[in-house]
Length: 64
Image 1 (cartoon, helix red, strand yellow):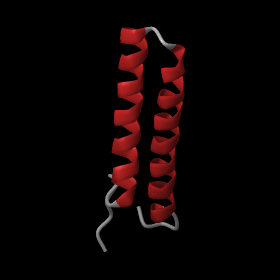
Image 2: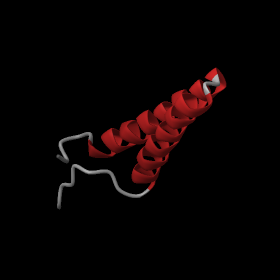
Image 3: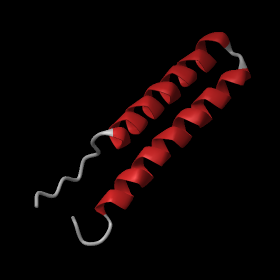
């Protein structure tokens, strides 16, 4: 069995999509000065955390 510490599959999709959404929201806040974009930043961070949690569950049980 080969252990892998980097996310793959759906976990990678969630991590990358969350990071992209958070960066896009941060850029939009600085450019437009509209505080409503903070919700996009928060949602992006939440999706990224979901990806890391799913990745951590996959490695639980001594598979590291």
